[in-house]
Image (tube, rainbow, N blue to C red; front, side, top):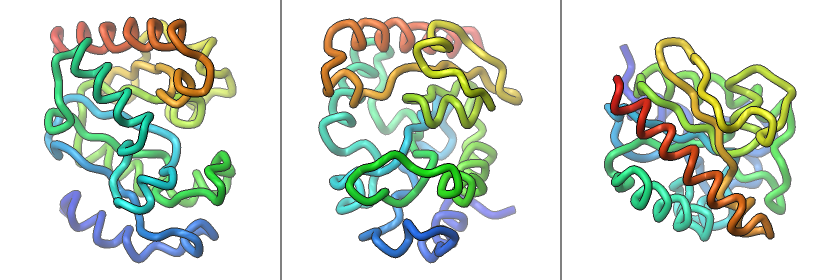
Length: 186
């Protein structure tokens, strides 16, 4: 059976969609490959594309802070990736066909990490994994079964940075506490 490193090495040469043409590098995912907790975001931004690591910009710093404060976990304790591994031009939303082209990489990460709790960050990851058209504001605040795992949807940290402010942050905190409680019961 291939390892996470094997899958990542294969993904680095991916040309399944046009996003591959504009990337600096594939942003596969990072963290503990045996983590009980996995975060799934949307797509790499400029900083992530340059560094090759998800959530290293302002949104990532906010996420790290909230996870530490609410769950007591540092980045080495969990795994984090995105629905797509290449940066969309101008940080636009990923297109459905780009998400679909990248889905096998996400599925492989989910299977190999085999987390007990998955926290989706924002609309794209939440809609994809819950197979729903409902937005994050409708589905957050609850937990959902996802295979053997429990899925906890929350806002993308960029929503707090783009004007959502304290209200979004307080809801994210509540969702992270919810995820912590689920982890504790596993």
